Amino acid sequence: MIYEFLAEGFEELEAIAPLDILRRAGVKVQTVGIGGKVVIGSHGIAVTCDSMPDEIDREACEGVILPGGPGRVNLANSPAMMDMLRIVSQRGGMIAAICGAPEILGRLGYLEGRRACCYPGFEDKLLGAQVCFDPVVIDGNVITSRGAGTSVAFALAIVRYLASPELASEIAKQIQCV
Image 1 (cartoon, rainbow, N blue to C red):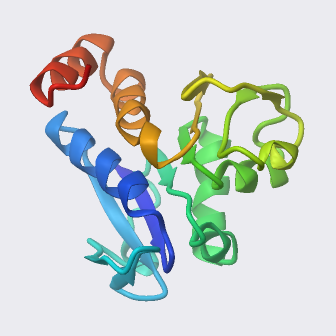
Image 2 (cartoon, rainbow, N blue to C red; image 1 turned 90 degrees about the horizontal axis):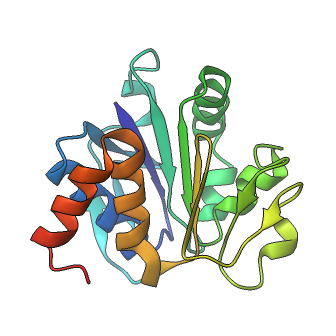
């Protein structure tokens, strides 16, 4: 199971594109509401999450997705999300963060010696990383991306990592991603 954590102020495109594309790929993914079952994004869009932190199966978790936007601060303040991130990291599971959320990974040392990207202006927060300016960067089990405009590429990179390049290509064709 992949868990995508949503906290008030999350960037909607960065959350919904991966959720949609992973489900198209047949990847088991659930949204986890930090602070409530219904979470409001940075543009006022309400999302009803699949579960709350106390309902997730920690043993089944194979990866986490962290959308950016102003909500990244609320994610970083969530003990439940931080605990799950630690567990996934220790297991070598997938850690994916987009926009400003890679700063959380930098602060925790998860980017040490890795290539990573983020929203422009956050580069100094990618502590220990070799900063890249590609739309999406995969380095080992860590996937980072730059922002809302790269959300589909980010989601397809996650499918490539979790499933296969062929499936990611097939989905890109289906959704007319050029």
